[in-house]
Length: 306
Image 1 (cartoon, rainbow, N blue to C red):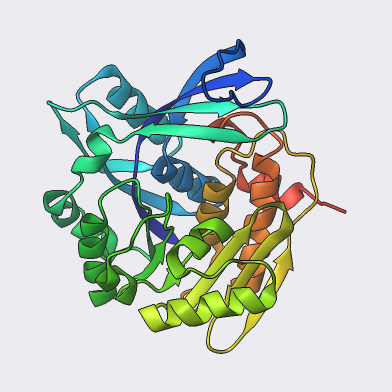
Image 2: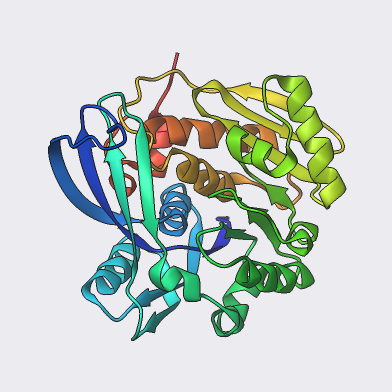
């Protein structure tokens, strides 16, 4: 039986500009190519979860503009339920400019737009969908106050909450008390705890810090090295699959979406779910663009890495 996942998050139209190298301050450089695609951490995670086998609902906001219609169609075309995406007549849909260099690394500038207007009314209208979900995911490209309200309602109905604290920012302390699983990368984890991630011992120190904040399950993604998870019963570092990355955009979002598609409600299969999510993410980084490179379940199951 498939997991049902609700994603509360951002919807951005991405403009991808490919370049030889990241520009220095004051430097003007030429680009190889320019393209536009559906994106935003919320959209990426939702589509990753759908393609990995979950049933997905989305809670978010777009503008009454062409970009908003483009995002709604992009999600619907990927079988994401868009019935809880509202429209705002006065603010534009979110957008992002992604600079992608020849080494596959990226720098991203984000305009929040309507993503920053997600609030109480959006959460209240989505309560029925949240209640019937197995997991609720939120990130920080929409307001934390909305995530807190959604997480409170989810927890009161036995729904497991997953927080991706990206982009890293000071967290409302109360939000963490309603967070079942927090999934930062190593930089975000250090930003939130003040403890640099260098080895397994420092990862355990990060876990202890998050425990004190009220979170019982930690997953730290460490790029092409792998992922670490810890809870009261167990901790483990799971190495990543070795591939030739051409574009790391949406790698972390693919990981989180795929993870939510596989986790059991008791979280006892965390190790296997992380391995599955890492395989999905390793496929994403071998293609260009965010959503176009997020793999489907058949690709994940058929792919083997040495």
